[in-house]
Length: 438
Image (cartoon, rainbow, N blue to C red; front, side):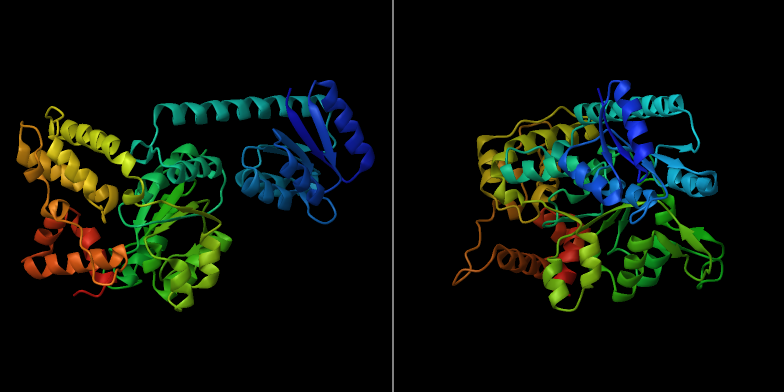
C-alpha cells in the first residue's frame, strides 16, 4: 500500500479522486492547496502527490518546485486543463513525473499512479544497490562526527538543494561531493571546477563558456563546464577563492539557473545541482567583506563539515590499509606491510594535510621500501618530526604555518617542499598563497 496525497481546491473533485484512489488500496490524504500539502508532507513521507495546477495561492507548479527541493523522493503527477498543457510539459522537464489532461477518466489516474509507484520503487532499489556496492571507502569512519556527516549527505543526496562542504584541505571534500552525486538520481556527468587554478577571466570562461571573439584566443564558441554538467552535478572546489565579480555571477546562476556565455547575449538555462567546498571559514570571510553574505546563504542550504584526521585518529589504521592496497594495485606490486615503528609514527603524527597527506606519505614510502616492509625511515621527514610546541600555546594552524614556512625556506623548489611535507604541490601552493608566504 502506498501513501498518496491529492491536492485540489475543488472539494467535489478532491473527494471523488480520494475515494477512487482509496478503492485501489492506497492510503490517501487530501489538501485544498499547496500550503496545506507542504504541511502534510512535512508530517509524513508520501510516495505520490497528485495535484491540480490552477489553484488559489500556491499553484501546482510552485508546489512542484517546493516538493523537489524538500521531498525529492515524492513523485508528482499534475492535473491540468488543455490551456495549461505547455506549462505541464515544462514542469515535466523540471521534475514532475507525469501529467493528466482534464477531463480525464479515473482509470487514467490509476494507470498514472501505478507507473509512478513502479518508478519510485525502482529508484529506491537502485539507490540502495549503489550504496551497497560502491561505498566511499575513504570516508568510512568510526568517528560519530564523520558518521553524522555521511548520514546527512545520504539523506540530502536525492534533493536539488545546494550543499556546502567545509573542512581543512585533504579531509575528503571532493570524495564526498562525488558520493553525493552518485547517491542522487542524476545520471549526467559529475563535473569538477577548481576555483584556484585559473586566472579570473579564464575561470569565468571555464564556468560559463564564451563566444567567438570574446577575448584574445577565443577563436570559436565554447560551452562552459556548467553546460557540460546539465542534468548532473557541478562541484565548485575552493569556492572561497572566487573574485567579487564572479561571486555576483554565480549568485545569479544559483537563483535562476541561467547565465550568458562570456561575450554572448543569449541566455542559457541548465539543470545543475551545485556542491561547493572550501577550507576557509566563510562566516569570517563574510564579516571581513571578502565574501558575499547572500551567496554564502545561497550555498549553505545544506552545510556539512568534515572533521580533520587528527580528530578521527581511530580511523588511521583502516585508512592506511585501504590506501596501501590502492597504491600497490596501481603500481602492480603486492600490498606491503608496515613495521611497528612505522605504525607508531603514523599514529603519532598530527596530519595537518589530513587524508591527502597520509596518501602522499604512503606513496613515498611504498616507492622507497620497494618489496620490503615499510619502515619508519621510509616515511617523510614531516611525519617523523616531533610536534611543535609554540611558546604560549597557539593553534594547530599556527604550528602548520610555521612548519610550512620553515620547509619552504630550506627547499630549492615548491615540488621539493611539497615532497618533504608529504602533500601535493597544489595544496602547498594554496597554503602559501593563503598565508602570503611568497
